[in-house]
Length: 469
Image 1 (cartoon, rainbow, N blue to C red):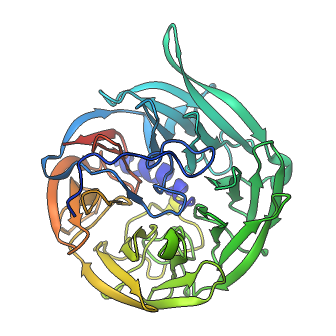
Image 2: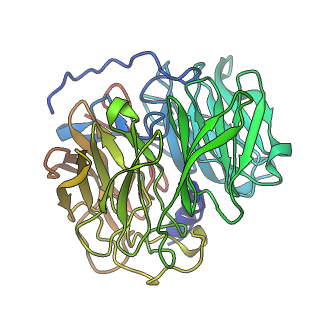
Image 3: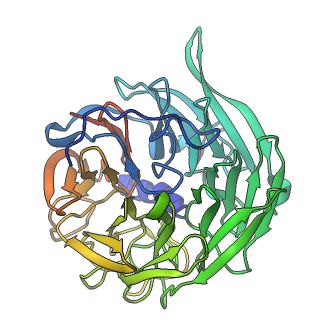
């Protein structure tokens, strides 16, 4: 998903230029050594990238309780153990001397949603970092443009809160000028990283680095997904299951190519699958799922251990669909949102022109269950034009995100922006509350974060929204 960073920066600039469970779900101690609070420290919710949470969303009484203006686009948001909100943002103008599209770690007041501390980072070839996580000391782990992995802590000072780089691991000699796009902690205490050009590596707790390179021509536009005994890496050509050896060098356990289609599709940022791989199923990670980019895109599910097929079927029943977003998972179920036709600005995309050149953004989601070696569609809706990567709550049984209203003639980025909650069991829209107006609150397919107090923190083109019951 990291080529989405180009979209977040360029897109925002273009737009601005124009089931019953207890209401409290305790977050257990993190199962991943070195990771922060369970449920709020990883962009996709957990190492397996299920985009699900044990916390309830805002629900039927949702409202905008507060909104901050970070001066840029915040692509990944975390909630620390002390309740503060930390986000990886791309500022329209920041740094010394000021530069456009500068990556900035931003800290928000949990009550007012106003920014209370900022730390601009070194700008790189990817215009900033979008993937990161919180560690067990509530530090933001992120890569900067110099080829370093940083751990940014928030500290109370006499003058207020300040963000500082507490630790730096220089990986530049391992990257060959490439930029880090994906970061994830694993169950053995290492940090995995990946670059756009196909370098995959790990950093151990004591700083040892091991790297491997994918075949020439394969690029990475998505994050890394971690399970207890390995990592899933999706290039523009193939899905890899990898495992680090004793020296930390990633080794390929199996590789499966997929149909990437004849060209990039409208509503996708690269020529290839737009999904971050999702582990789910037996044991929580026995299967791994992706959606390819074929003319008729397919959901493909493999056994994680050996890459043998579990099942596959067309990802959507409706024609002219596709996705740039990660499937959500709960048990043996997957929910896939469609982004086909989403209007990314020309500066945001790579991999050549799309075919067709444009298409209407109809949106929609589908739920597919896996059992007895078969994929079975449970429901599909074409009425929910989700404009963010939604979050599935295992506590309230709803899918939460921001959505456009019904399709109307003219640009998609004009009109109401709604908080929407969709019933996981039926696909029926349960809640619709207007929380903004595009283009100012264009959701940009950004990822939100649900906090333990049922608050959805969601970035838009100009604001950080605190959507609360």
